[in-house]
Amino acid sequence: MSTEIFEEHRRLLTGVAYRILGSVADAEDVVQETWLKWAGVDHATVEDAKAYLIRVASRVAIDRLRWARSRRESYVGPWLPEPFGTTPDAAERAELTDTVELALLVVMETLSPLERAVFVLREAFDLPFSEIAEVVGRNEAATRQLAKRARDHVNDKRPRFDTDRATRRDITERFIDASAGGDLEGLIALLSQEVTLVSDGGGKARSPLKVLSGQMNVVRFLTSVTTAEGMDKFMASIGMQEHGGLEFVITELNGGPAMLGVAAGRVISVVSLVISDGKIETIYVMANPDKMEHLTPPS
Image (cartoon, rainbow, N blue to C red; front, side, top):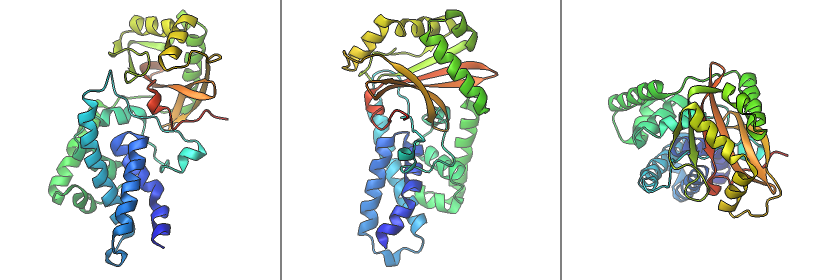
């Protein structure tokens, strides 16, 4: 019965851990550690299994986030959260009814570990403050202050993007066509004047080491990497000298449309767009091969 109870809440626990950490691999490690703690506890002393498991997973995730933050200080170039797919396989690993947008995860990186945990547990899972206070080891009043500070910070920094899925998918498709087809005018027409491009190669894939800002800087980069020479250099940087060409497909990641770069049956890049008033405001490019391992091309 203890195994059945844990499996009943596994997706929920992965969802909590992923939102706190922004990493699928780390979230799965948290769930495994939670299972070990659950297997070793006297279940007769646990009044509410769900609350207990969330409390354990959250505390483990907070500790892991503190460790991960120190590790990310030496990360090569910008760090972006791992994309999370909504394929049936991925759905087994997280609760997807309120999947967090990538842009929100990026903003949440600027919160302290405690602020982030409180924000996730309150805003994404609507836990009462009394339970959250037990998780973070603060009294209820202090926990409410943490929640307010985190919410105000997120609301201040969170980009205002279009939520219409059809519009977002249409612009993503046009972005693919313009980029892959070398349509300079079409590409410029899609980008805002102040567009930024954030690329995460982690020192393991050819990628800008700084955020690119401004329409022309972004266009120059995009046109350079989509040439045959630019693509070959990128493929070589991830050890794929023989790749047979690159295909771009649209799939659902983190609750919105994203562009996958697929070569030899393997996802080698993810591009996610933040769109506001019909223009692309931010382009997130994930190319670190370590962050692609859990993704599979759509069939």
